Length: 463
Image (cartoon, rainbow, N blue to C red; front, side):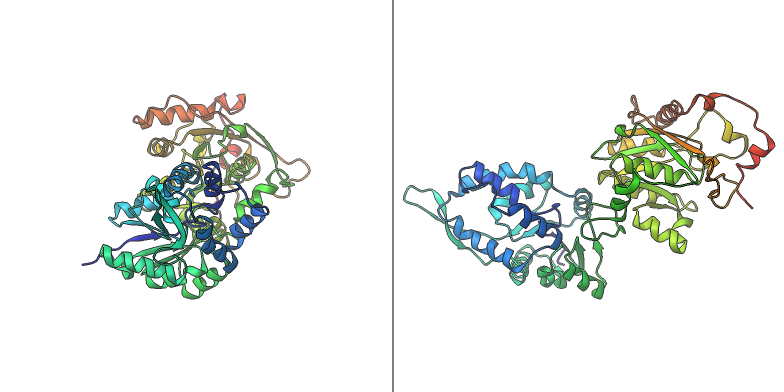
């Protein structure tokens, strides 16, 4: 019985953009190409990044074989080794976890690309691909026994229908059933390949492929953000909110935020915060956005079931937590988000404390944040929040939007990553995390006092 494979395109699919700039630079450094950058190349690459492949760009790619005529094959392969390091840095964050999932399922990983094989093989090895299906430049040995390119293509140009033919040849030889296989690509010119597999997935599609995917109900994903997050011209909704977060004005609340520099500018982080109000999600989000990152969070399943709020939650990349079950699926998704380089907001308390517990100076939390940090290597960044309950107390069904003359201040302090986590003793690590959050709260938070009946009432949800 033939097995299944996972087939991936290269540019704008597993890479953030085109591989051409990095490859051209390496060829120039190796003394092969005449210039490291083509005049107007930056603009061309930006158009390609946004709009995808075009017939003129593919005509240039097809003609590149002539430019390589006479080049020593060994020198090109050496340049490709040099370029692989730079290209690996352009791999989109959600690609490695997906490759690992296919690998764990026993499916061979195949890189299928128009880019010449000699130029992409080092990157394919680095990423753990098992096979490469790519354009091969024809070669010949000269009088000195040096292998050089002839300027021709050996076996056909691996693009559009030519890519499907090449993949089919490989599948027959490898004993792979394409009807049981997966294919991931961004280009409308890869429609023949997508239509030939049982599991077509459209990645960061150009507008033409997106229309086809909608009509055929194929999945549309982006490997630089969580599943379900929509994008338009490369931007997701939170990218827009990030631009305006510094100027966000809510007349019924004020923000006093400091310490955003402690949130890493790149890579994963667990932002662990205390929980005092339904308004906290706004404060968390604004704080992370002002750090230049898009926040992802966990929220109870009921919010995702609401008609409008659920759509907004999914569009922001939030993770649904079903409290009626173990929460294992939410934990696994949170782990994937961190492995994808996201900033994940976690409230270790789980819910807003009620009654006298709301006024307890000692914060107690569950071990989820510590476990996620240990599993992914992500730093835990503490966030101490104060005053949000005056904007939206738990006893109210909505925030107090009428308090515009004397709006309460929501104070947020973000500290450096928590040090000294064991990665094995999760209760002890959680205590350390909660202590770091407590240290960021104002002095009044440390005062143990007897709350009034009215204050206690404000901590109880409406019936």
